[in-house]
Image (cartoon, rainbow, N blue to C red; front, side, top):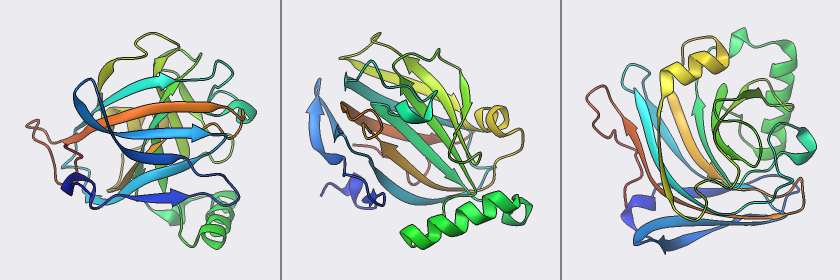
Length: 217
């Protein structure tokens, strides 16, 4: 395994088929190829980055295949060819009873508690860029659409986001420590196929320097 991916590993979801992640090359760029076939799983790593250290995230991805029925706007069509998930710590004592019960259930099913908050950048088949959505499964997961439809498919795209500003927009509060990041390509809800490549993912400080834990091929 390349040194860049040593700290990454697969995370399966209970009762779901597994998306395949492998090394590939697209347009001369090394990347992680994600291939979903009616499946969902994550390729992720743990982090420990304090909020004052992190300013932005810059990431490259290549959308190859997406299903026109897929859209994160509805629970029964909630699939996407590419997602970048950032998991944050926080004061779990401030969670609602419903959230705490959900967290306990997830821990029972998977053996680990979910992040206090998850900010998800998504490529969607239909939703307009900059749309902010609250997950129908948990209000501790918020999605920001950063790309939509067929535009740009089949070529490398570079996106850059201000993490603090996006977290504030999505959750209405300051972010805590960044504890994880993950790639996710899925087609389980629409029973479809999706394929994308993930390139460099740079976690940047105020001086635009890459922080430890960034993915750099």
